[in-house]
Image (cartoon, rainbow, N blue to C red; front, side):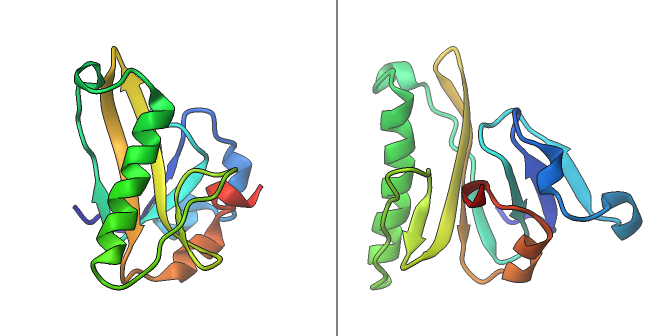
Amino acid sequence: LQHPTVYTLGRGSDPAHVKFDAESNGIHIYRTERGGEVTCHGPGQVVMYPIIDLRRYHRDLHWYLYQLEEVVIRALETFGIEGTRDDEHTGVWVGSGKIAAVGINVTRWWSMHGLALNVNNDLRDFERITPCMAH
């Protein structure tokens, strides 16, 4: 799934991380039920929203986040790209740049939301926010 350019705020995120006036720019900002801070979705970014009954696997959110990161790392490997994890932040990096964001919500062990992989998107859109890992 690819979105038109939108910004999403996690359930506990601080709107101060948005550095622009959405109303005057005609850009949409949505508060979501996922964890994390503010991020951007747009054309050229692949977004995945797996809906999984985690009771059939593991009732462990850290395990699930690790699995989502692993999906991205393995997908990148097929293109000869080395993706890595960060011990302090959720997501996947190539070198020092974050290539994929992960944000989930789980209710009664059913997963919602998921991950966003930057493939060929305009990274200038991230200049309008303080991204999840930058604070």
